[in-house]
Amino acid sequence: MSARDAGGDAASPAPETVTPDEPAVERGPRAEPETSTGAQPVTGPDARPASGPAPADPLLADPAPAEPVAAPVGPSPDHDEEPAPAGSGGWTTLRGLMRPRATRSQVLTALLCALLGFAVVAQLRQTRDDGLASLRQSELVGILDQTTRQGDDLQREIAELERTRAELESGTDSRQAALDAATRSAEMQGILTGRLPAVGPGITVYLTDPTAAIGYEHMVNMLEELRNAGAEAVQLNDRRLTASSYFAPGDGGLVVDGALVRPPYQWAVIGSPQTMATALDMHGGALAMIRNSGAKAVVTMEDRVEVTATREPAAPQFATPLPAQTS
Amino acid sequence: MIAVIGLVVGVVAGLLVQPVVPLFLQPYLPIAVVAALDALFGGLRAMLDGIFDDRVFLVSFLSNVVVAALIVFLGDQLGVGAQLSTGVVVVLGIRIFSNAASIRRHLFKA
Image (cartoon, rainbow over all chains, first blue to last red; front, side, top):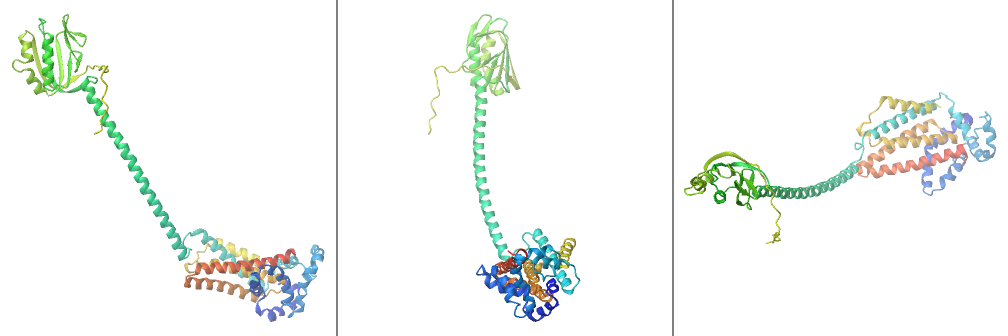
């Protein structure tokens, strides 16, 4: 509109008559086909003002050709506050535009600009707010497709990882089972070899021998009897009796596994109490022989007998395990 | 000047009101905004060319917006909405660029 002012009021009739084919928009569309050739718009706009409005309005044509000419001259009027020299520089025109003037076009332009600003802000807010809501159906389908594929991939990965975990778990399980079995076996053999103390139902046999009538043969007899009856852990006084135990005559008692054991003899045996008591009391059995020799024997069946003495088995000197043969 | 004030007022109003874009407008608003930007640049260039006319500006502004939205709407109906809106944005972008080049030439003589 300052163009209007600068170019004189004569410019106002010009747009009315000439610009029914829109100067603002016409310029664009006309440039469009040329933009395809690329370099055209560079030369276009300069040439256009001259060629476009010129035939209709010589007055308006004046400033346009003035520009290329004004380029060398331009700086000098630009320093001064002389917008009067026909808006030769774009800056002067722009400065003229900046002068607030409540003309109809100014207000209209402001209104449209306000609308644009409002719309821009609304759109920015919208774009920031919704991720998917503003997308088109085809885009949504694409995203859905991709997401589904990703989900499938992840599902496959889950299955794979679960399989691996199951394998590892079963491996742990079998290791644990082997460990348990080994522990059980060690316990069992520890009890059988006398390495571990043991507890359980069984009998105690108390032998008083004031006349030293009990000999090693009685004891061997009795131990055999107990083993036959299923004794699992046997203790005589403080000695643990195992498979390699032996009795020998000793001075004032018996030698058991190289150590002297004196009367009274206290047996602690873990096994089936009933069976062992019956076996010992058999007619002509171990206890009968002991009693015949003049000693006294008391057998007590108990629910809980503790065999606390232990004996470390000697490592085999000659025997080595036969390599396990796979069947 | 008043135009710049109007732009600022519009932005401030948008920030204050915090408008929610209606659902049926959502696909068209971005295109309409780009079209309006194109019209704005066209108007600025016309001003520098000295051939600005408010009536033409108003009409071109509104018709740009409406036509752009219409094209997108048509594209949506035809099932090529994404492609058509891309095309519209490309065309408007080219126009904005050429207008901006013209403005630049006016202001910087380069």
